[in-house]
Length: 233
Image (cartoon, rainbow, N blue to C red; front, side, top):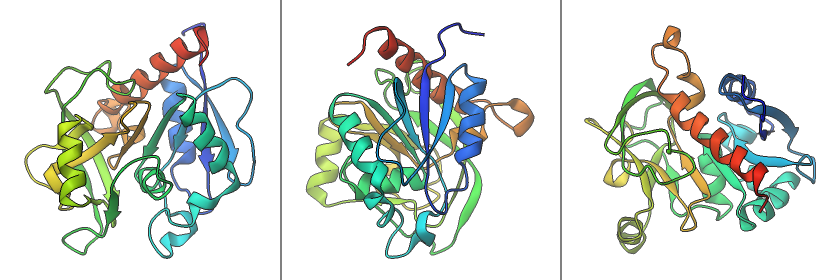
């Protein structure tokens, strides 16, 4: 067990499904998860990172994440990110980050118009982020997806900018399960401290579940959060 277990806030919105799963997975990689209700206005003291988990916040009314972005806790999350704090959005959390303007682009309905729930293969495009430091360049990761609105898109100008600025961190390898532009499965902001991804790393931290590749993502976050504790932003 790592002595310095960084405190990572996991936000619970109305309709979150994977908050407890995310907390369990973070504990498995030697972090100290703390569930935070969406109506809170402040993150817990000494928060070193934030995770916005998967689910169907507010029933995906309007669009996935469109209402959750107005939750009271999001002001604190936005301020935390602006100061360089580490924020990871998973599935619905990714949608919320895009709707809140913390990440570029938008997630729309899958090209198949069907809900998809299965394992996918991802290709790691960058290892110099706080979320992929334990990965290898070009490494293939097996991580499941489960979503109806996971089709990442944006204007031609935006997509070209993401390529130019190297903000695409994860791509689907092989088939494209939702029709995302450029096979995009995960992106970071320009600063590199906020990442969103549609696949669920918290569901792939033990080989008994089929894969432990997701632990590489969450352990990378825990490592970076630990460093943040040692040298506060």
